[in-house]
Image (tube, rainbow, N blue to C red; front, top):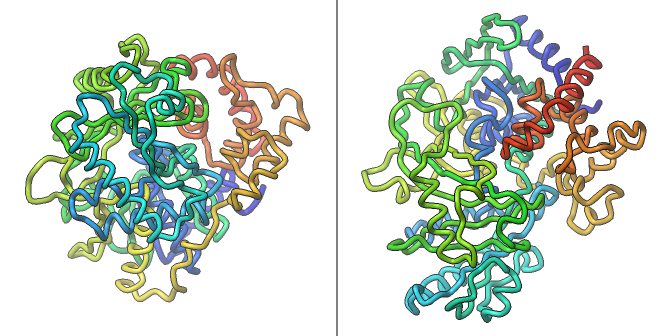
Amino acid sequence: MTSGSLNARRRERELAELASGERVDVIVVGGGVTGAGIALDAASRGLSVALVEAHDLAFGTSRWSSKLVHGGLRYLAHGELGLAHESAVERGIMMTRTAPHLTRAMPQLFPLYPSTSRTQQALVSAGLRAGDGLRRAARTPSSVLPRPRTIPAAEALALAPGLSPSGLRGALLAYDGALVDDARLVVSLARTAATFGARILTRLSALSVTADRVRVRDGVSGDELDLAARQVINATGVWAGTLTGSVRLRPSRGSHLVLAPGTVPMGTTSINIGVPGETNRFVFLLPQPDGRVYLGLTDEPVSGPLPDVPTVPESDVDFLLSLASSVLSRPLTRADIAGSYAGLRPLIEGTGGRSADLSRKHAVLAGSDGLLTVVGGKLTTYRRMAEDAVDAAVRLAGLSASPCRTARLPLLGAARREDLSLVDAPARLVAKYGTEAPRVAALGELDAEFAAPVSPGTEITAAEIVWAVRNEGALDIEDVLERRTRLALVPADAAAATPRVAELVDKALAGLA
């Protein structure tokens, strides 16, 4: 075990410390990318920190993204140059300094068919060139994200064999950032925060919050506890309004379909399909390292009570299948869907209009009672959101803290890309664990039982399950299937792996007792 290891034993010890009456500088409510980012920022400045999460790390919106690290191209179309530049800067920081091991360049193909007018082509091309200007302004080298260019039809079909050749006159090719796994980014942030002493406490539901106190219910023991802080930060995203009345949000749903490997011949290049009647909205076919393809996303307003786990409505399924089929050589049907997921975005209430047109800017709001709440934003800009939140906490509570250092603070497992290629472990593990991959692989080398996959049809090994329980804070089989391995994105894969994973989780937890 290391200082960055999260597990049941550490949780029990650190919760007991807080329950005894210890007062920390900052309590963060919410274990998504924003909350984990805040915990890391605050702890790395020398503040004492506790993060409380009702369920598990990345339980909410943070695991339901398109897995993209956007450069802010879309915001240029809305005239939000500052937000576009901020996104490009944060993308560069993540891809070159803080998380090269968890990110990769994603080639993006914009196919040109007769339905694409020359004016539309010119607009998209101009946007891609502007986006490349943002990349240069953010000092992200072209070796990480190459420049955009126009390519002929033959090259487009070579990159994306699933495209329909009929009427294809070429394509625009650009590059953006992508995550290997959005939930893994959150876990890495939390574990890195733990190396600086942050207490990362899942299964703690916040029953009530004030500026300096959080009453929680322990989901393990059922006990209710009062935790004290000099400043509490509400980072619960789309659910922020359930803890304070000072926030007005307009949630938006983004739906994705999961296509099994081989459904669409993709290679490593995504296909971006313009939404008819829209100038800057696209649906994506996004190939993943494991062969799956994500088809998304929608942008629809959501009203009424917010579910813990949103679902994809039939209307979104029809929309995504129809639009993707319009550019593919073989139309997609419901039989091609292996799984689906939807996420809720915490968009700040605007002056009207569609949710698709609301700004993705973030805000740090102080309630009349002094409670700080972080809302808005997007996964790519989590680090800047965290910096602004901690800056506000330091000012409001009069805390003594060092300046923010997260722009140059590598997450656990990070290394330069050229060094990652030299890590002595399977490439698949390096892409998930970075420089920690040899430690994961070593579990299988010490015990052949741990080297074997947990079920036919997956490469995920028993060693990865044990690692998740011992080091990544997984407390039960659901944590492992849903958020540490993502097997649950395809229900059939999860069902096949469940017996073996359950056995491994029980043994690993017993070893921590």
